[in-house]
Length: 98
Image (cartoon, rainbow, N blue to C red; front, side):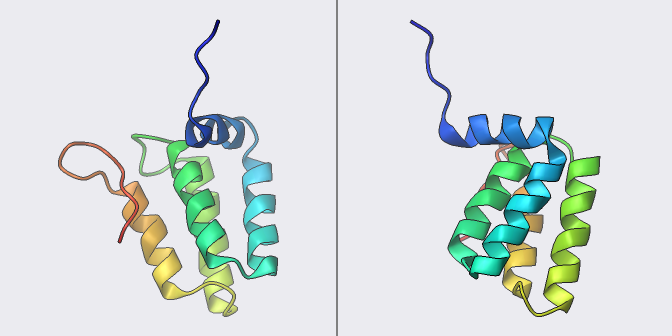
């Protein structure tokens, strides 16, 4: 019996295989104004390019979040939280900021 993957890992694989979906998901969450869900999805998306601070997915997400922040749809804290997810701690793990 195969071992199941943790949800975040499975979602990261999905976003890695379909970057357009990642942006659609963010836009839907922002439309629903669910900041907590947005941080969860951003964590999953950061796993889509684990170990890489710059990739097409990450750069698209950075641009999308910057535009959403300028429009007032996403807080500065959310943008900073996403950037923090991309910065590995000393052990190399990516952690959700407090």
